[in-house]
Every structure is written in structure tokens, then in C-alpha cells.
Length: 322
Ligand SMILES: Cc1ncc(COP(=O)(O)O)c(C=O)c1O
Image 1 (cartoon, rainbow, N blue to C red):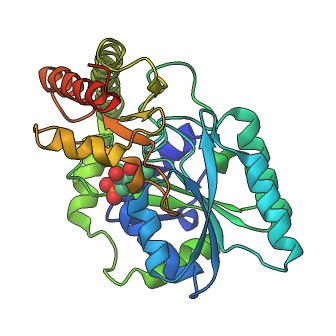
Image 2 (cartoon, protein in one colour):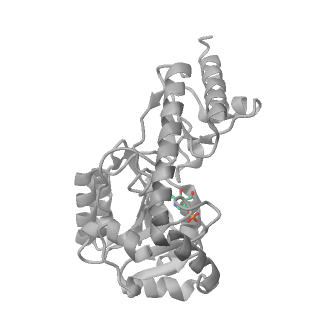
Image 3 (cartoon, rainbow, N blue to C red):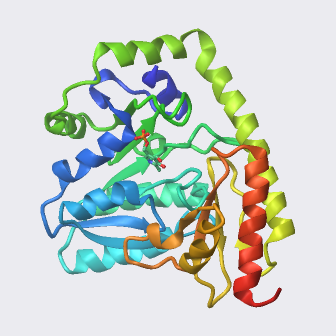
């Protein structure tokens, strides 16, 4: 099944390229053990999925954050950082990126940036870990090739998961990459392999074309909920709040006009029963109080509408406009 999914992402994977684990979270958590000694440099995005990045930090990695805009990681910035590090004789241990329907930013790495990122990885000899948790949940347009599909030299380690396309409780994920990296990840996986039961449940569910039709169903649901949330935001939020429509995934990222604070906003909305992820939980370097991540995937329609209305009212209140 994973081989089939990787084929759809442009990669012909052999068994020696693949490792199955308890969710992609387990595999991301193994990365520091394979790659990082305390003090080693790891490049991440800002904002990023701190669920993974906090594990890198806990292993003693020194983190450098590269900004992310509407087209994904700003690879020109990455190039400058890699050049400067090379000048100092430092080779980062890896670059962690979420190219498609970014968590939390909702954006997708553009085609030219994908090409440049893979080219930089080869030029500077740095592994790129591409976390494609949301790759299949596309609402509009055609899929872009995964970084692994563009990589001819084995620098990209692709990480995927079934938890976003089957159900969240199904903690089955995979890594696909150079056999040597896969072998080392496997060595550190002290829990052992997935076990035949869960593996068979997923394989059986995914057989007979059921996964594909289930993904189509999820896409329809999430697309509707995303539109609903965007429309509610357009009606309820002050126009100064910057919002971009994501092309897929779970999240809408909002940037607040200065001096508004997402943490202060959360304090106000939480008292009214509405929560969101403040940007301060999305940056390795403590930034992010100017932004928030809204998730449309879980809550039913009526809760999305009432939630956005409450956040909007509190935004106006904080701005002193109402
Ligand atoms: C970007 C990203 N990577 C990985 C994961 C972890 O997924 P899994 O359920 O497979 O551990 C998540 C879950 O929220 C995520 O958003």
C-alpha cells in the first residue's frame, strides 16, 4: 500500500527504502537519535510543527528557523544560511520541512522552490526531511511532485502517515528514503515493528480501492468546511487580519495587525469556550504572537460558525473598534 502511495507521489520505492512505524510522529521522533548530537545544527521552518521540532530541541539540536510565506519555505533565505554555515565549516544535520498544506501555515511549497530546495540539499550535502502528512488532502489544482520525486541522489527522506487519510486513531506512518537512513532509523526503533495486526487492518481497509474513495470523501468534507470558515472569517474578522485560503489540509493561518497579540486573544476567547493554536506555539525561536492557526477539520459546521463569530468579536474588542 505504501509503495502505491509513494508511486502516486512520483517515487518508485523498494522494500529497502521503506520503514513503517506507529504514526509519522514516531518516525520524526527517531530523527534526533539517528542524526543529532547535542550542539548539532538542524534547520527548521518558522512557523513549523512543534510536535516534531520540540523533539529535535530536546535532543540538544541547535535550531535555525527559515521563514515561510504563502509559497512555503523561503528557499533563498535557506541558501544564504547554508552558504554562511558552510563558510564557518558547519554542515547542518538535516532540514525539516512540510512542503504541502503546511501545518500550521496552510501554504504549499511552489514548484520552483521545490526544485531549488532539492538542488541545495545536493549542493551542500544536507538531508531534507519532507513531512507530507497532508499531501493527499488537496481541494484545488493538480498535485505537485514530492521533493523525493525530484531527488536523484538520495538526500530526501519522505515521511507520510495514514492518520490523516484513514482516521486519526490509526497510528501508522512511514518513511521512504535512502536504504542507509532507513536502516539506521530501524536500528533506533526500540518498540520494534508495527506488528501484524494493525498493519493488516490498514492493508485490508486500503485494499479494494476503499482508501481512494475515502480520501475523496474527506476532501469534499474538508473543502466545504474550509470554505465555510473562510466565509465566516470574511464576515466576522476585522479586514486588517490577513488570511490566505489553503489549497488543502486542515488549517487556516491568520496574521493580526500590530500590536494585537494572539496570546491575549486566546485568553479572551478561551473564557468563552473557543480555542485555537496561537502562533507562539508554532515557532522554535519564540516568535509568533502576531498570528494564529485555525483548524476546520474537526469541529462541526455550527461550531465553526459560532467559534469564528466569537473570535471576531474579541478581535474587534481588542482593537477597540466596537
Ligand atoms: C505536519 C505533521 N506531521 C506529523 C504529524 C503526526 O502524525 P501521526 O498521527 O502520523 O503521528 C502531524 C499531526 O498532527 C502533523 O501535523
